[in-house]
Length: 155
Image 1 (cartoon, helix red, strand yellow):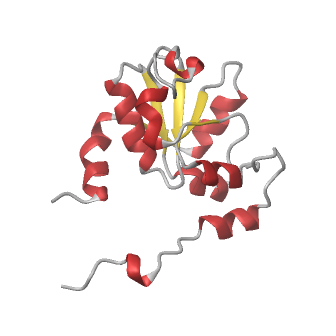
Image 2 (spheres, rainbow, N blue to C red; image 1 turned 180 degrees about the horizontal axis):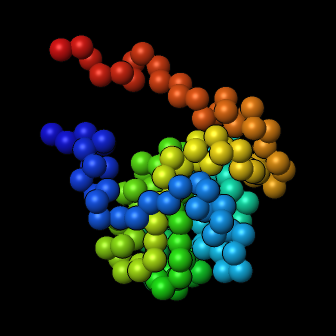
């Protein structure tokens, strides 16, 4: 049986990752990449990188393809455009990046360390209304809150 981390390790050699400082540089360039935040809508609403689009992981494939209720035309047409996939810690984005590559996206990468790393690098985040998010509030939000019942049983 594979665990989530095994899946990440399996596809990681096949994708490109960029660090927050690389993304900062790309966003400041004359041709910034499309930012695809694959977290759940409630996570995106709480905070995200300004200008990113929310495409939850659960509908990523249909959002990237034509002919579905979830199709996002800008994304479906962007197979040649530079895209950075974003999540909370840089794991879901690895799988999302890998999937998008399988679907023909040529210039897609994952934000290594995710929004946690983006916040640690002291880059701006906004809430669902576009208001700046305080860095300390973001630190608290990104602190893991795994409950005891979510831990693996002792063997």
